[in-house]
Image (cartoon, rainbow over all chains, first blue to last red; front, side, top):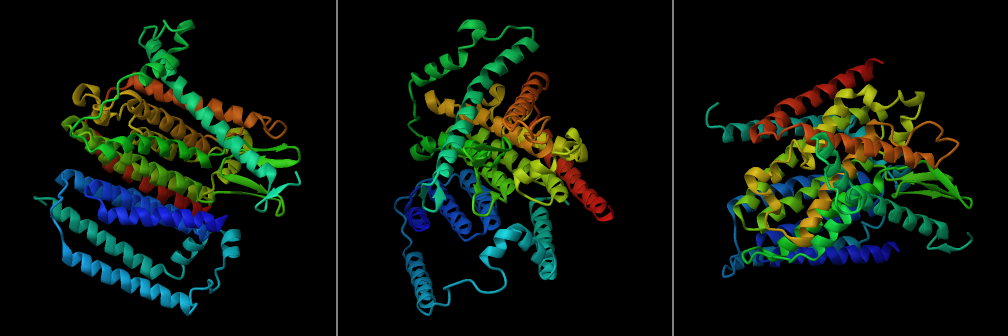
Length: 167
Length: 354
């Protein structure tokens, strides 16, 4: 059943990913991108990572895409049918081919066959994904976590300074 | 009993379908009659009678409204972006309904030797003898409610009208800012509970005859969460996106017929969901006297609590005038978010000391 479900979700993900680039209307592209993010969240659920799935929907589909849709709406970008950007198509296909090649090599050499390390699927099921992430983040990875938060704080201060004319 | 499909007993599928149907029909009926109840309650509060003509004391009013909206002409503005215009009501409606999947509406009942937890996204594993449910239930709800914004934003943009666009912009700004405060408010509750699974949260509130409810431990969080939820679902006093007097119903100006009805349903379904969530997190969920011996009393208590909160929503609507836009933003960013942050710090300190 999981394989069939995976196939369906993959189909939706691929079709919506194609629609992101082919849609003429930027809002429809943004909607397709949200659909792709949603499919990614489904993959996380299938990989026993419910916390990642929820965060994926909340942060990417929820927050970032709302911001994007907001920008598109405010700038009122309309359909431009005549524009063709050939250089980005070439660049995109090169990157795509490279990624595909990488994936195929990884799969052939079977380095991505099974998860390794101390955190197995059974352990996640008993302890809980959220608890594991929280514990790791606030013990072993505390310093990177703090550095990231300072970085975000700097970004927020910068945004406020840029937005305000008078400080 | 003996039949198994894909490694799961037959009862599993029957129970799942039954639970989905019951919850869905319950929400739909509540939505239909919430519109009636709202008109009636506000009517009586303003010394009017409310709907009286259709049926006994207007009891058939929701059905009459539904039939009327079904047969109205459907208008799609010529300059609208058709796809987004058509899909927006659906996007508004779906998150409102699927949020209900993780809310526990009762304890565990036993039918023909098979235990059924009364929560849609939960099942009883017969081999392990344990109940599994979504262990990130709260995050799931926050994620789904963040998707509800799209319906309104798209409706506003796709209509290609000034009023609708203003409504859509207001809605997105409002929903994003109040989502933050609502999320931060329930963080303090989950610092106490130590789990994100909603059925466990309800379980933790079962003792002491109701005194273990989180509303008594976190009154500030409960208050702020409820207010922010009202803002997130665009209820009065925060109904700026559809302010009739200034924006001619905002994002749904250009909508007619069933598509308008879908926005209307989404609003009320959101109200049911938000009230159910507040009940689950702060008011002890389905807990109440005698639920241990009579498990079917659980849903009854749950529904009673939800209806009480919905009455409070309508009461607020009848009482308070609408906020101004700058007041709304001020309240969200400069009052609620700092208070919730302080609440989290205080909860952390107390949790560390105790």
